[in-house]
Each structure stands twice: as structure tokens, then as C-alpha cells.
Length: 266
Ligand SMILES: [Zn+2]
Image (tube, rainbow, N blue to C red):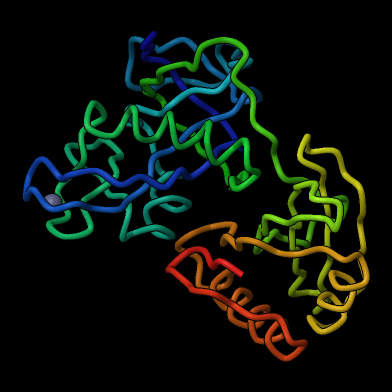
């Protein structure tokens, strides 16, 4: 279902996508935006002067793929386009993901299924992070996910920690789970969160001032790391954490089979 309404949210996810660009034909990587249930949706005002205070907005109560954002979009320029200028731009006053080769806009029908499927797949693996920056558009077109779509959002009690890596892991008994590596720049500290295959938290280890102690924890638990994913594929911060973690694992005698851009088999 597609609606044109005003949108106010601090709950949105940048979902990586890979499609063939309809303009230049090359395979391109970019990102789409999915907004979460706490997003506020207002009626589309007839006048261009849409007033957020005129009519109280209602919450979306679900996830929705953002087709276009237009109208009043100053926040989006600041928080989306200026931060992610290789992925998003305004085309005909609408925010659009752009092709990494020709910078033409990728129209919603080209990317919709890639973003919506990617959102569900990555969300289930806790590989999506709420960007938590204010988006306000006076004219948003959204396609809502069917009811019941949920994701496992990464959360941590300390707001200055960010998840940098998610590793698939296996216990000595052959049970699978995930190990999340979190980092706080402010504290210069790492934290580890281990979850079972059902997402249940089994261990939270918060004070690790270096990665060698993280590796020691992994080894004390007898966990084998089978694959390593960047929490955000295009983030240099996550890529650096991966390189440092792989080095710490190597120093401790772990062997790595092969490595790709955003994940490594260990
Ligand atoms: Zn292109």
C-alpha cells in the first residue's frame, strides 16, 4: 500500500542494495531507507506550508519502505544527503538513491524488492542499525511491509557503544549463535555480546580495553568463529575494527581461510 503523507521519524535503517542501474546498465551498489514503527505519519496538507503542529500525527506501527521524500526536506539534506552523498541525492526535488557509476537516480520500482528483502534478511541477522537522526518530510510516499514483519534490532545499554562486527559462531557442542563486537570511541572500550541461535542473549562482557582480551574471552568460551560480517558494509570504522580483530585473532593463533569485502570466513 502506497501513501503520500508527512513523515517525522528518528527510527530509520539504511539498507544496502545491489541492482542493475536502468540508466547506465552497470551493476551498482547503493542503499534504500526503511522507517520503523515509531515513525509519525501526518495527513498531507493541501498547502505547501504543511504544519506539523496543526494536526497531531499518528505512529506508523510497522515498517515501511521509503519510496520518495519530498516537500519540506531540509533535515534530510543535512542528515542524509550530506552524510551519504555517494548513495543519495535530490532528483526533481525527491530524495533518491543514486547509481555509484553514473549518479542517476534509481527509481523506487527498481530497488523496492531488493531493499525490502534485504531489510528482512539483514534485520533477522541483527545487521541493521537505527540511524537515529531526525528525518522530516512534508510529502513522503511509503510502502508498508505486511503486518508481522519484525527485525531483531541491535541494542546495548550504553548509548555510546556501536556494533561494529557480527560473527557467526559455533560452540564446542555444535550449537550455533552470533557474537557481536561493540566499540565505544568515547571509552576506548570493546564489549562482546553472545547470542544463541534464537537471539537469546547468553553473555554480555562489557569491559575489554583491547581486542586481545576479547579474543581471550572467545577462546575461554571455546567458541569457533565461522564468519565475520561488518555491521555496516560501507563503514570504514567497521572495516578498521574487522582488520584489527582479524589481526588479534591471528596473533592468538586463529587461522583465516579467505576474506571478502564485507565478511571473512574464519
Ligand atoms: Zn548508472
